[in-house]
Length: 82
Image 1 (spheres, rainbow, N blue to C red):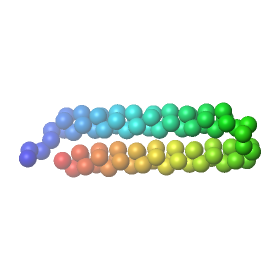
Image 2 (cartoon, rainbow, N blue to C red):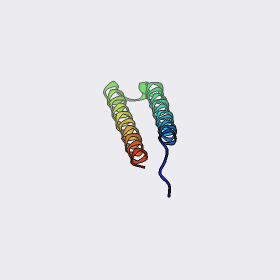
Image 3 (cartoon, rainbow, N blue to C red):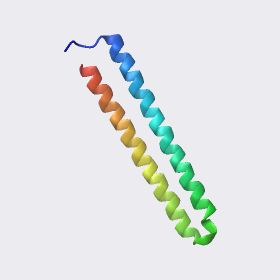
Image 4 (cartoon, rainbow, N blue to C red):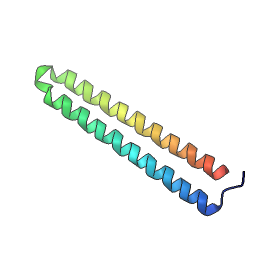
């Protein structure tokens, strides 16, 4: 297997970065949908439960965005190693 050229590596890294950004946007959209659902049903359960759910959604969002970023960095490192 031949080694990748610098230009090819940069192009692959751009694809990886774009994919990572797309995933993070999807995660943020899912977060917004979840928060909207909590607000819509907010009257049917106590406010402290709604706040707890919102906090849990935010924590999960952070976790999955960090995971996407970590995967992106790992893949870029793998590409750079050739």
